[in-house]
Amino acid sequence: MFTGIIETLATLQHLENENSNVHFTFSSAFTHELKIDQSVAHNGVCLTVVKIEGNKYTVTAIEETLQKTNLGNLKAGDSVNLERCMAANGRFDGHIVQGHVDQTGTVKDVIDNNGSWTYIINYDTAKGNITVEKGSITVNGTSLTVVDSHDDSFSVCIIPYTYENTVFKSLKKGDAVNLEFDVVGKYVARLLNKSR
Image (cartoon, rainbow, N blue to C red; front, side, top):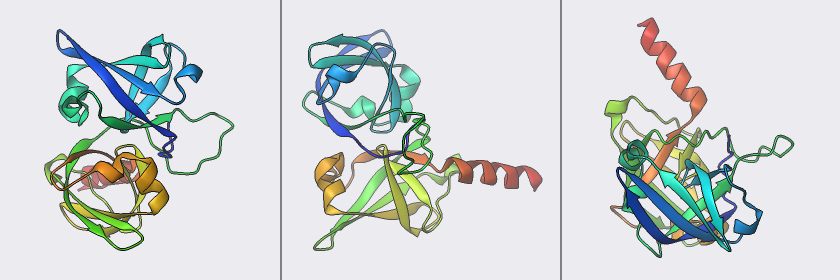
């Protein structure tokens, strides 16, 4: 389990295709603290560390993960948001994040508010996911509060610290982002649909 509080960025060093899987090798500031079989969220996608060499480590994404997330768009030199799984005695600073991306969305617009940034994100409603105003949403692994909620889009505001220390500073109109909708909201929506 994660909380959506990004610890650092990782840089993709190289990737290797093996059948339908892709092995991603990253470098990060805390590679020396990782261990084999550890869960680490990459842009919100929970992946298992399978190899460590110096300041580089490798994770593997299967075909389903590549199809349902933006990881398949990565190329060498790209950065991703990183978060290690929550320690049992840690503070719960974000919200409940499972590391299971529900779907991707598309950045519709980025608005510079002279001190903050508003990101408007569209998503396909056919999957049954919803947002609510002032509810929680995870975008590329970052726990955020929904500002405006619409049927097929929502907006979030980013403070300067988050902008500078996550992949948000490189996001532009048309980019794909990983979305994990609030787990409580997903269960409530499922129960309401069953009762109809």
